[in-house]
Length: 425
Ligand code: GLA
Image (cartoon, rainbow, N blue to C red; front, top):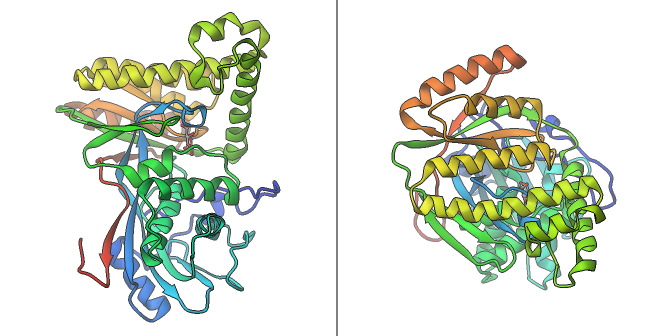
């Protein structure tokens, strides 16, 4: 059982708190973390059954990387790895959280969410409470137990799943009557404003809005979205976890974001209609190349091309053209590596293994970058051989054991157990 991943976090003031590697312990007594074990952990900790248990999935992203905070398109899906969160209201207004994976407990001093240096994992839960309160929503005290099987540091958005699951549970327990999109936005705000990671909307959106056997294209400007059945007979999606995670990933991410903003502010001088990289065509970018710092130009070029790749990928999906889809995945990786510069030797190696393999139409590094997983589109008949060859090659090259996760696309955040009603799963 792998513990759930918590990113190292940076307080809005800039101070750094517990890095992810401190949070990797997994108590042996919890063999399988799922809805029943989290309910049991809750009852053991708080002395009564929780009012409800929520499942909030991790996510993959087929294509459209670093486009969400540039008002572009993304193509994510919720997966069969999740955080389970059991919760009940609490009378004294305080917040008591039990992280089953870490065997760690947090109790707030009073009814105000305050950023935690020591129990940094609690910030993902406190952040959404803080943001909901800013909107004038009533959120009282809470008892919460959570845990899951979203792998550590693999870029599968365990923190977004936790934030989404928490907001989903609060919405039910305090009858806030929020829509799913309201929940998505509050979860993102918790991460941006309380945790201090300036992520886009994709991860929370995928966790809350996922649909079984489908990917979803989100227009991050209009927030219009469309589901595409991922109907790929003969193909499998498999993640290769490099096991590598750069410790400066959050600050590098925020730097990339600032570089894109710099590009927009320069290009706006030539065309006032430009308010994000979504408004920039490849031609416009090229025309004003000399006005941009070379690094900023490279960042913008990747994003502008990646936005068009998502549209091309959706077309390929509709046409059942997985060769074309795969080519776009490889192109995405090359841009992430050479222009966005967020790849590491380990993920580059894994993608090159895929490229050399006849039955792997596409592969790329997935998520924010600097390690984590590659996502591979593989002909199912060759999955076993490809996996075992890559495992051997990876061990030889880096001395690391490759973790392999086949994924199934699932529905988004949902209540799996409601004590006041009947059990659903
Ligand atoms: C991280 C962020 C997302 C997105 C991806 C890159 O996962 O949380 O918002 O920007 O990186 O596509």
